[in-house]
Image (cartoon, rainbow, N blue to C red; front, top):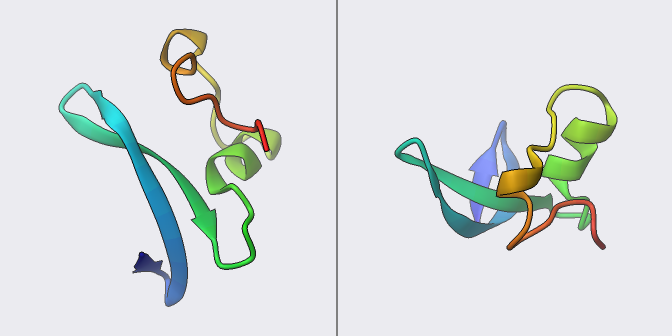
Amino acid sequence: MTQLAGRRITCLQTGTSYERVTAICRNASGVEINCAMVERGAAVVWERFNRQHPICMS
């Protein structure tokens, strides 16, 4: 568990991409942050990186 902007989040590391950590993160209410970003147009899903640990699945 870590804090982001003073709020607690929990992240599950799913691997690395371009020497960066990839993770699926949820806030204290259980909202999947990755999915929320996609739904709001702030991020896109790259299918080739979404196979092993897909986002927006719960």
